Amino acid sequence: MTSDSGTPLGRGWTHGERFRPAREVEIIYGHNLVKSASSDWPSYLAVSGKTAWNLVEKYVSKAPEGVGIVTQLDWPHLEEVTSRLPDNADMVIGIGGGTALDAAKYVALRKALPLRLVPSAISTGAIIHGIFAKWEGRKTAGKPPEEWPYCDFEHVLVDYDFVLEAPKYLNTAGLGDILCMYSGIAEWEHASSKGKAPQPDNNTISPIISYYESVVSDFVASLDTARSLTVDSVRLMMTAMKERDDRTLQSEHAPGTGHSMTGPIEEATQRGLIHGEMAALGAVIVTFLTGHQDMLISWLDKCDVRFRPDQIGLSRDELKTSLDLAAKNFGVSDPGSILAGNFFSEKQFTDLWSCLSK
Image (cartoon, rainbow, N blue to C red; front, side, top):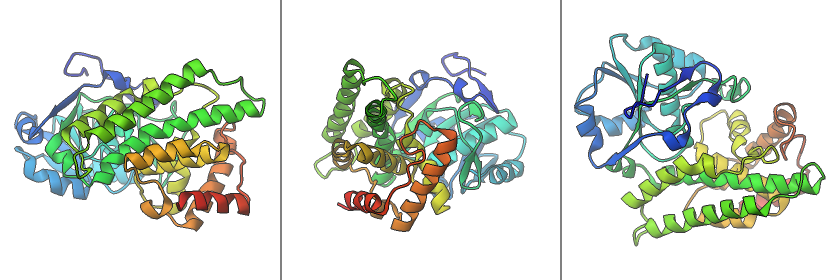
């Protein structure tokens, strides 16, 4: 299979690290795109969430051969959804947020069909990554990325009207998924202070911080006078999402624990919270441990990214359980993580909760 531009597209049930780099993903922007593009789609299967499908159905010119409504990414659930879909389609169209888009990758891989993505919000890196996690209930399984599957897609269709219809917080969550990678700097500095890593290289770190600052300032400038999102906001977030991997601190000393906290949080709560908001919270926790949280919190607040427990519906007990799971799980899967084996004392947790409650 190839993309619209002729780039070979890969897929497989393992070796997720082989997914096409985000910088190479083709993105099509415009108004009323779902209606105009869907009239030319071949026979297709739609994979979506209930809310997203109810919103987008009115925009679709050609009805799908079948609609798979997903509620979670547990593989038995995805297999059930896939088995109910007919086999007479020529393509899979993923429509919705991160859960729906990752589910569409599963269906396309399972049915050996090409894939296109239509995000309902710019809420997660699932929009531009072919890799997707293997889930058992609310817990990921297998070692990423080599034991996770991937399914490259032809292109991403960003319909401004569809995306801007979503609540603002769903879109700004995507900035949480980008800015959370700042926590890698805190991890590196922590490892260095413990004699486990060389001193961070300012020539490497300074440009990354400058880049994050420019993303924040450009995003704020893109908002209208009521601080509502605009077409410019949507395009800026998508551009930043594409650039994220190349702008992220790539170092064995910065394993990205902030982003990885999404797993323990979902395991602790047993419900699907918004990925970018969980990643942002995880990054704040990591930077809190090194005393570098103020800059990140300032960026998140300027961009209206929800990350505080009361904003995202996370109780005090659930956060404590999430941290305990992270300390336990990362101790096995990622011993270099700042949270590996780091069980919070009562005082330390109280201070963290206070920081997150401001």
